[in-house]
Image 1: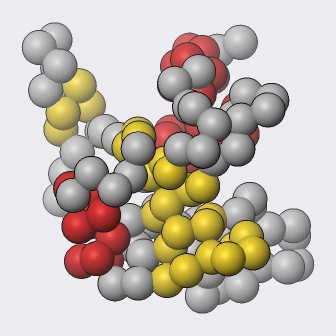
Image 2: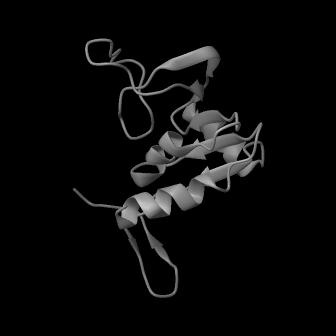
Length: 118
């Protein structure tokens, strides 16, 4: 198991049955692949989607259904949509149980560098 998978598997251990979970861009999106058996969670995307489903099968992609990282996803029954402002209000207002952040770099003091200038 490589380092990335070890990190992702460890994060997945924090998931609890019934949690609403926001997965940030990058490695955090991979956490969905390691949800422990018997744990049912609802995935939230910062771009305004609650009830994010798995990645679509090849040929079944809908370019209008994307996560915050612009990856195509599917929707689960009961999925809902809202503005990104409402989405961030859900996170900041404590309505999401767990948020897994992505970062470009983490320094030795744990500070996150998550902005990239093109």
